[in-house]
Length: 326
Image (cartoon, rainbow, N blue to C red; front, side):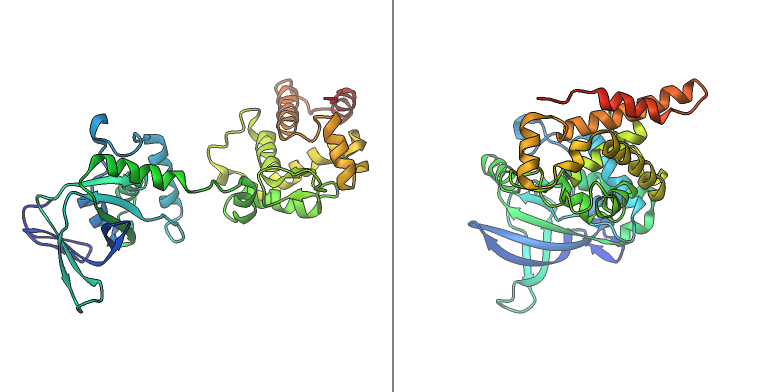
């Protein structure tokens, strides 16, 4: 905390503490303050430092995860989204309510208050790194929740509760809604336009359920398509380097190959036929799809290292000869 008056992005920080506009309310028996601070104030006066293990109330900091968030913010300064950061303080601050009973006013956090990060430490560190690379980000805002909770065991329970109730969003939905990633855009086009896949892709769930007429999930196709470009590990470090059209064309060629060499994919058109195919073959497995895409990449990489193009007829012959029976 500062020991003299400071102004950061228009927010005054008096010598006696930090004063910020806030809303005050109550949740689960605790006082909670809701703030909207500039990123400059957030990263200057709200620490993300990890406490000693015996005093920690959240998971250890992962520098790579924090760096990835910072990269995301810098690369998307006009449309990034970060959720609220959550802190706990050991006692209530001084709250000057503007209108009695409104819950709106100014919160003063005195110098002796202890603020501990409960959730969002990676966003906090990522924002700090992003501001160092692009100072204009300091003038933008982030939401902040501050709970009054001095007890370590209860803070740990807060962290556990916050991370125990959310349900992970299916990758298929993330891919379906992602308009930034060229791989996601190409995969959505593929799911809509390719003769094998059109109307036969699960776009909302993490897996294809029994009784579905879908071949694959959108997430499985997305994973496989990445392997067509980077090989079996599927890790694309910078998706922006790839053209959506190039991804679409190469992916179309891959699924053209599957259609021409594995007629069972085309012939099994109803839900019952697909269930029967899944019962006797691993061809519709997402893992199999990833392996085939990785093999496709390896065949092209091997041919390229020898100074010639891969021969389509060899790929077709090899794929026709594979026994996918479970």
